[in-house]
Length: 118
Image (cartoon, rainbow, N blue to C red; front, side, top):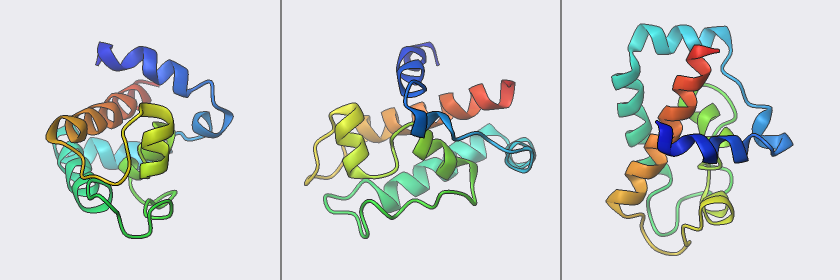
């Protein structure tokens, strides 16, 4: 989690990214499911919505609410390929590598864990 801290701090300097927070219902959901299940959901969402070379509805594929991972994706700029490029320099037009998927999920989970502590 430490390896993501400086990046999370930089993201929080963006007014748009900083406005995303887990609500009590989201935190309850995380507590009920457990962090490992949420991590599994994150892998599923990233693999199905973001990892391809040309994701369907890119830029609009991640809802703004409905699951803690979606909220985390917006806060961490992992919501679409445009944000992945702008913030994390992960190029568009090619599938994400396993290492990039792991990085995205790790960043999402670090953000969720920070939110669970606040």
